[in-house]
Image 1 (cartoon, rainbow, N blue to C red):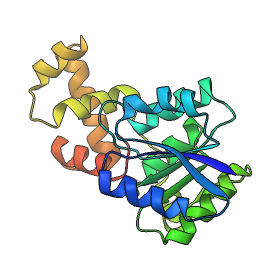
Image 2: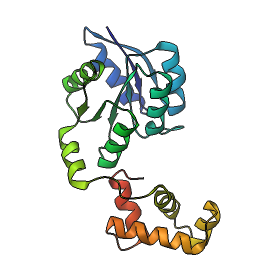
Image 3: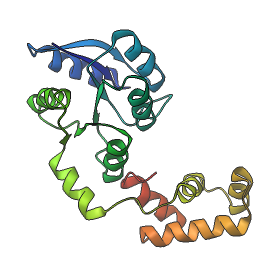
Image 4: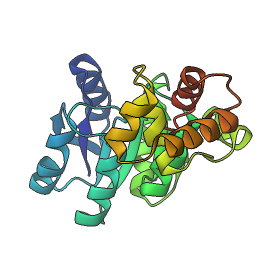
Length: 201
């Protein structure tokens, strides 16, 4: 029997995923959680074989949780199931240790099959997302460029961003300019939008 922990912040979606999996004779849902901060404590308690994990969750980001689970419960396999089918998320999730990545509009039988395959040690990736990831390529932004872009999203001034990150105004301008160039945008707002759509932030 494959024990699964379902982690999703939307109660209806979480319940639906759990119901679909519980219908399978060889899969049982051990627990359900609705925030990122609950995942690791619950996983420690119920020791699932597979954690079905959303990317964007309150409290703690799913991509951060992957690394924590891999460190503390290395035998547990992680399958991302998210609405946000972005190439950057796929790359970051797999790099962090996830064994699979599905989008939520996948057919129910595909979900159960993905849980089985991930549990057996195989990788499972949504085919269209894998193709898009190859076309888009790896995330070109540095960690600092991502930080600067994230802070620029709300319209913060360059001097305010510089103060927040303890950088000079010139350094922040350079990072913003590099990010704009790498995304092919014309403005920092456009660069943030493109980077977010591709899952680079």
